[in-house]
Image (cartoon, rainbow, N blue to C red; front, top):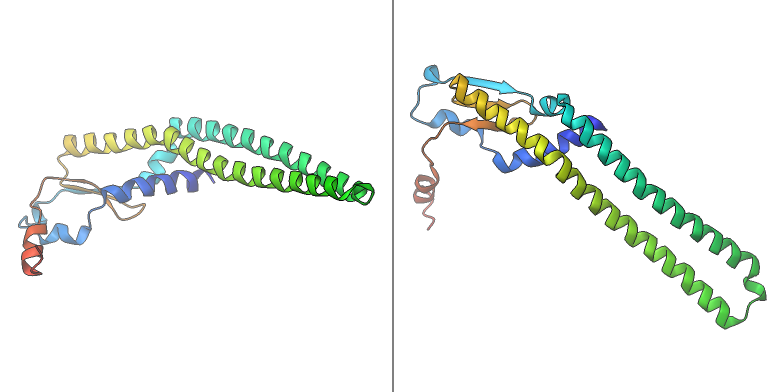
Length: 179
């Protein structure tokens, strides 16, 4: 789960960066002059001590939410058992009231679980975002210090670093007659 959590978040982040590697070699720069490196960014992030702290914090947060859900489910189970055992003795209006009460509690549990998933996702972004940024920044420093033209990410095949180059979008638009 740890690697999957880190990798999924890191991959999502990297998709925003993505440059297709094939276009690199279509530029005017000779491939002989290029300095290219690669790194498994998912592995780098997984190895960072901050990742373990973030994942531990996220795990505690998720466990706290799960405890709340379990308490709500216990309450639902008690109300349902009470309904099953006593409903024959109740008036029709009391049965309707208790039925609605159980339905409302189930709806509240469902809503809580949905919000909890959103909260967990947000917390994951908040905790791992700075870790991923730190990893991205160190790759940029390495690229600059090592004078790399391109650094590929072996996790997903994306490009983590690319030197300034000519943007070919306008040329492609002209060829395709797109305004």
